[in-house]
Amino acid sequence: MAREAFVHFMVALACEAMPLVEHYRLSRLMDERAFPIYRNDSITLTVTGIGKTAMAAGVAYTHVVFGKPKTASWLNVGVAGHPDFRLGEACLAHKITDRDCGGSWYPPLIARPPCPTESLITGSRPETAYLEQALYDMEASGFYATASRFSSSERVQCFKVVSDNRSSAVDSLQAEPVAALIGQRIGLIELLLGQQQKLVAAPEERQSERLERFIRSWRFSLQQTRQLESLLQRWMLLDPEHCPEPEQLGGFKNGRQVLIYLQELVERLPMVFP
View (cartoon, rainbow, N blue to C red):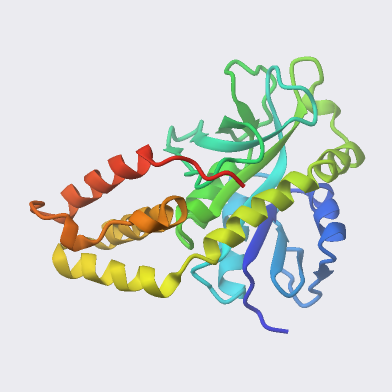
């Protein structure tokens, strides 16, 4: 079986993994010892263990083992707390904050999400106070900071199902109810993967040629080139008939000015309905 895969599920707990393993008919790779890993022809799932360090290590290991395709989608699926959301509520993270270091990340949503979105705070301990109106977990910052190095940011998302709140304490969580909460949201995960597959199916050859012409017209650093590629990819999905050509953008002195201009225009584009 080929090692390359197109979707990487990353979960912290075995009970979060089991509904996905069953739904996608994933098989355990018995020769992998670093982490429990499951897969089929196009999907992998890695059980990393609890905490952002374990999650980051699992993402890096998965990237090395499965062929490093640039078009791979990464999806962190798991449970999270929230002060007021009802148990079973599903959300995508539109902002991820690491409470320990203060860093924040903003996963771009390239289409109208199939569920609500919410801010997500990652900490080193289970949350019991719920002081902010946000989701709480222990893995997302490690996941996003690592996975976004290996794929464009639109292909890296955190999908969380609420498992605890002010009325139902986190220390009462059991494996079987957690598995049930994830299993009840498989349909939303399917919709999310459908959006990701559309992203992969965008016309890569035409996009690559356009990117090269931008690079020939202005000087971009490596990080700026990645940002440019991401912006053009988003534009091709949201409004492919009007994706800008470098010849249309005269008057800019450097790549930074081009990126600022493109970012402003992309933010004004309407969302795509799934």
